[in-house]
Image (cartoon, rainbow, N blue to C red; front, top):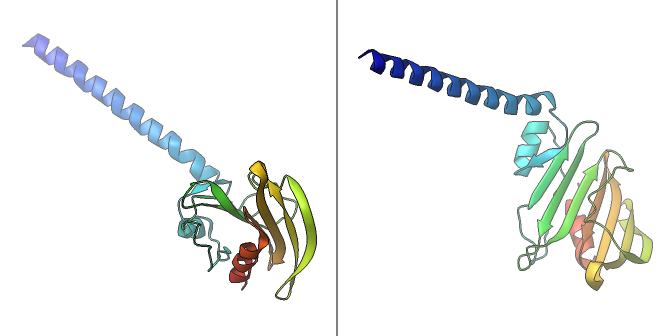
Length: 178
């Protein structure tokens, strides 16, 4: 009987230690997200970004080409040290990122390296409704045509990159204007 009680005591202590370790790990996992609130991280939806970071203006197109999947495949956002939101959209067939929409309070902000034109064929100032936009048309990896459009919308600088000629890009941009 004494052996039984001793074994039960050891199992109880062992269970308590395991429980305490699990609780400690949960707390340690929770602390960084609470302390570093606002620093860049990935979100699962635009609504989650709006509620977590208290953002009103996230510029999302109302128009998408048929080959691009909604919702965004990846969303990164931050409010510290400044507000920025990056959304990546993929092609229905290839599941490859083909559209990147980026908004930031800072014009000189560092963007995702996926949005890169390897060879610029044309760079023009484009009249986007009543805004001055910069349109870049060129070639990306694998000799794929790609385009980029940047402009200022309210307090944000908007940049849209798409792996296609500029026609769809302009339609997407116009659907984002407030």
